[in-house]
Each structure stands twice: as structure tokens, then as C-alpha cells.
Image (tube, rainbow, N blue to C red; front, side, top):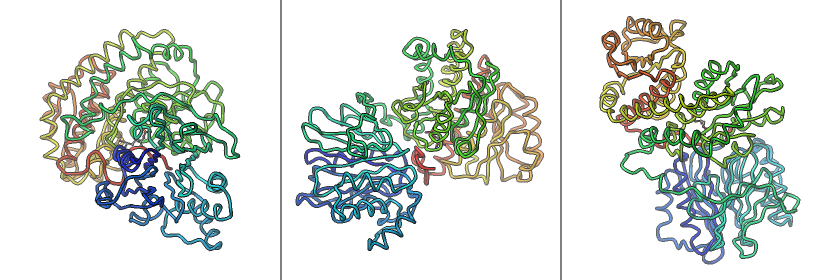
Length: 603
Ligand code: M6R
């Protein structure tokens, strides 16, 4: 959701913050802004709706030399998208940026108005500024004002606060991501909602726990200090060396990150195989081999949830352990029944999805052991789970998740093998190699998929259908198309269409039928039913099937030989390409689709 970057340094703060905001663009935003201490020591504010270049235009000709700056990319929750509602929010002496939602904002605002405070925006965020400002006016230090104000706001949030009179930036969070960083040579300090903003700028990164007040000064003896809200020094943070490099995040020869990330998949599969079967991941698998859960509670959102459905099928058929797979946003508000020796399994690319973290907290409260399949190492999810199986997908920039899905499913498959207790990793390695090879072949022959995309992208609506292990792939295919091509698409279990949705079928509707070796004949019958109602048929199915070719208007032949078990991933990559090219023909903003954020850190 919203991106935060703050910096204290040597005259270069605005530039560092703008570079950080640029890196956070991939998360999705609708406006941006910076507030910095100018040459006269005053806080000066610039903010603008639209892309970052609008803000940069506004800054043209301005003296940007500054030792302290906070910046923000906004993804609107409270208040429409306009300049005034953009962040930072500033009164004369204090500025704040915010990521999250203040649930009791209306109530607190009413109280502050009755105390004579005025508000410039419709945001919940400005309410926090009001609280801090009010407390400072009553004589409190900034530290106390922030600590007290934070206790008064409900909901998950991260705030970064800058004050004119002191050369410090404070930050505090609850249930929202926050990371601080320090450059040992220069004593520059940074804070952000995403470690990616800090790459190459700092040597050490720090992840504070909830309610810890981070105090950034950039001073030689105490550049960054962590406190409890009562002012005592805090040790509730994790510190690690900043290791990730920037290079792999460039687009290279590809027009979009999404396309690049689709093409990275064969290499990543080989990397995952090496990591778990030959490298450091071996140690983790030894722990998994000793687990004997009686049931698995699997939780995730969006694409990660669909990966979870494939993993559920693996675990239930291989391990005969019942898996209850749920959308984390629903699970968190139910009153689920936990049993002794349940295992909570959480799947996430970012490791920061608010609903997934809330589901995790529910398991932690009930003392259920927790595992993650997560990409971002050091993310909140990875810090809170008892055991992490990292999916090793590298940084995923495209808002539409592609390579993370593949790596999640495969890591889940590895986990299922380990849960056997006496795993046969050798066979699995062969399957991984074959999958990587088949994907390479598919990716070298994209022209056919591109041509089909060109012919169908303007149709009214799309039904992605699949049965058995291809049902989650139908759901994922429809999600991908919706989010990047802005067309209505539904993922459906092929056998369910006749229970209602078939009423929608006419010559303006496309059925993308995912047909693999499993339940093939039944899936074909379902396509016949749609064909009989004049729907346009696209089949992703086994090669050399003249009957399927004849039945379809467009046929994408796939070589499933020897790949049966991992075939959902194979077909899914074909789906990813289809969606990508349809979006390209529609001319949408593929890497940063409208209204979406890469990491959904609010409910
Ligand atoms: O970071 P997470 O994997 O927890 O994110 C979950 C969903 O928000 C994410 O998969 C979303 O559905 C993607 N935009 C799908 O492409």
C-alpha cells in the first residue's frame, strides 16, 4: 500500500528519498510528496497527485539541499485522490507520513476539532498529526507526543514523524511494515515501509517490533536508537546486514517487469532445486521431516491462496494429512476450531499482507505451530513464523504475481515430500528439471499465444475453467487477466458451470479451458456444453489431440509427458503469457495496474 521513505544525511536527503520513492513505485500509488528542512531550517512541503514525475516537475528549480526529508507514495483509503489528501501532512512545525488505517479517526477528529484544531484534508492520517501537534502544544516533547498519540489511534499503521526544531525523525508502527537502516561510513539513517528503498544506501537494517519508537538522528554517537514508549531503551528489533543487491531488479531486454519475471521462472526453479536439495535449504527440510501434524490450516490471499489450493492437493494426496485452505481475510474473523498438533501454514510473496498476518496472529494466540512459504526474507511473516521455507523467487516487481506463484507451489511440493519423513528427493529433482526445461520451450514459442491474445482481447467476458488440480489454475488465470487487462473474467470449476453461470454464455464470451491429463474426458464434455451455446473456445491442452483442436477456436498444445504432477505450474505459465499479451494489446499499465498495490498492508 502506501510507501514511506525518510532520510537524515548530508544535504542529499531529498534526492535519496526521491530515489527510494521511485523504487517503491512498483507497489502501486496514486500520488506522492516530500517534506524537507530547507536552507532556512523550515519544513517545506511539495505533493502532487499522479505519477512521481508530477512531483519532480513541481520540485524543478527548488533548492533541494537538505539534511532531513520524509517522502510518501499514497494509495488512497480515506479521502479521494487529490493534492490535499496526499502525504506528507504538515503544520508549521511537524510533518507526518502514514501507511495504514486509523479506524477511530472520525471520533478522534471530532474531539480535536472541539479543542480548536483545524484540518486541511479528509484523510485519517492527518488526525495523527493533529494528535501529535496538540500534545506538543500542551508542552510534551515530540517523543512523548508521538508515544501518547499512538496509544490513542486504533488499527494497523506505521507513522514517520519529522519535527522542525529537533534534528530527528521518529517512526512507530503496529501491524504494518517498517524498516530502518544505517550507513556505517556516513552515519546516514533511513526509514521505510519496504527494505527495497534502502538497498545500496545502508549497511545494516533494523526491523522494529510493534510499538517500538525508532529515533533517527544521524548523529555520530547515536545515529539510530530504539525505545519503548515509556522512554526506556528497547531491544525489540531484529538487526541484519543489508545484503540484497539492486542489479536483478532491472528490466533488461524486457518491456515489462511482468514479462521478465515470467521468463525468469525456469532459472528460478533450478535455483530452488539447488537451494533445497544441495544447499542451505537442506537444514530446513530436516526440521520438516520431523513434523507430524494431524491437520494443516493453510491461509493466504490472492495468488498466494491459489498456490495454496494446489499445495493442499499435494499434501492431501501425498501425506494424507487433511488441509483446510482458507482466505486469510475470512479465516481471521471466523472462530476456527484448532486441534492439538495442527500446523498453521502461511503463504505470501511479500510477507506483509495484513490479512495473512492477522490469520497468523490468530494461530499464534492459540499456540499453533506456524510455518511460512514466503519470498521476502526478513518480512514480518518470516519473523513471526516458527519455521520459514523461503521460496527464493528474488524481488518481484510486477504487481501481478507470476514467479512467486510457481515458487510457492514448488516449495509446497518440497514440503509435502519432507513431511513424508522418508522423502525421495531424487525423483522430485528430476521432475523439477523437466518442468524447467518444458517452460523454456514454452517461453521460446510465445508467438502462438500472442496471436491468440490479439484475436480475443476485445471479447466481453472470460470464463477460465478447470477440474481437479487445474481448478486453482483457472482461478489464478482469471485473476491475472482481471488485474492487468481490466476485463471481467471468472475462474470456475468446469463441472459447476451448468449450475448457473452457463446462462451467461453467448458468442461474446470466451471459455479458456484448462485441460490437463487429469479428468481430461470430463473437462472436454464441459467444453462441449459451452461450444453448444456458441461460446468462443480457447483450449490449453495436451499436444497432438486432433479432437481438442477441432473442438476449439484456438488451441494451445502443451507437452505434459512425464510432467503430470507439476503440470498445473506448466499450464499456469501459458495462462500468464495469455494475460500478459492481452493486456499489452489493450495498452494497460501492466506492471502497475490501476487501483492495485503490490503489498496489501491494510485490511
Ligand atoms: O504478498 P502476498 O503474496 O501475501 O500477496 C497476496 C495478494 O495480495 C497477491 O497475490 C495479489 O493477489 C496479486 N496482485 C496477484 O497477482
